[in-house]
Image (tube, rainbow, N blue to C red):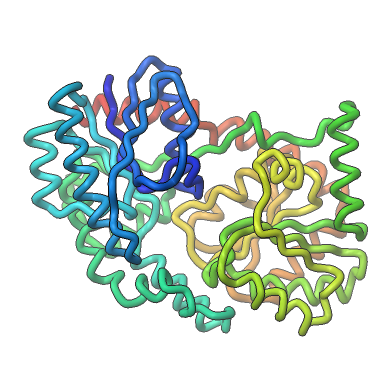
Length: 406
């Protein structure tokens, strides 16, 4: 089967969407399919995978509007591709590509059936930003992209409605995302929408091998670098809806109770200086480190060296960081909201009330107070990911979906 995969993100533009498209394409290619990824130009050289070809197209670097310009360019490239190498199914990754109802109709009639992956909704992103603002997160509207979401999400929701009605099959990345689309867009009763949670790279994100000298040496070096007796990790883009301001307020309570606790935040974004200023104001100068980014191998080592991963996001379509932590054998503390409880429960971590710093702090302290419990939850998390959240599993599900869409 020849699958055209249309995604605005693809490595070296990683992100959550870029990562999932990369790994899904590789897993499908390993099953004998041919994949052509049509993505945005300017990201750099894509990694080579046997059976996967990457085409780059132009786009206008304008917040939100890029989804339309990229969508038009991707459609032109898709038409040319189909003329020279017929496509069996077209797989869109929404919402970062915006097609009109007419474009969906033209694709179905002239090219191939359309499968649309729903990674989340623009209206959900907007609601997450509003929630972050209500919790007084730093600089909620200072980022042009966030401001564009606030002002234009309602307009761009029209293209999501077109995906709901114009796709042969929709695939939501969580039950929460499926409910979100059902509530906002009232799809017809015959709407074909399946839930497939994205997996993670279980060969990169692995537990600490305590019988391997190199792994133990790396682990000891990481712990020495950040100091302290307890290491908390938070990973993700430094943006308001990720909840880092709330995390710092919660960590102030944790640190007051346990002065040996340390927090490392890894992510790129416009909030770094503001978060550092907030940490200083809370008296956490020596206890909080914000890393702008690091190679995947180093990040994977940090995941497995942490005692606990904290994920305080106000909105996610699914959220991959908790799964990467679980694959690394590290328990997770996250919000009791949206898709996160679909992956995290008391057997692999702990949930706290979204937007409540005291609830977050209490959840963190309860986990740190039970080292044996942390070990058992880490093992259970790794088992859960291997059982239910791998790209090999996803590829099999999508293979059946593509066949159904034809």
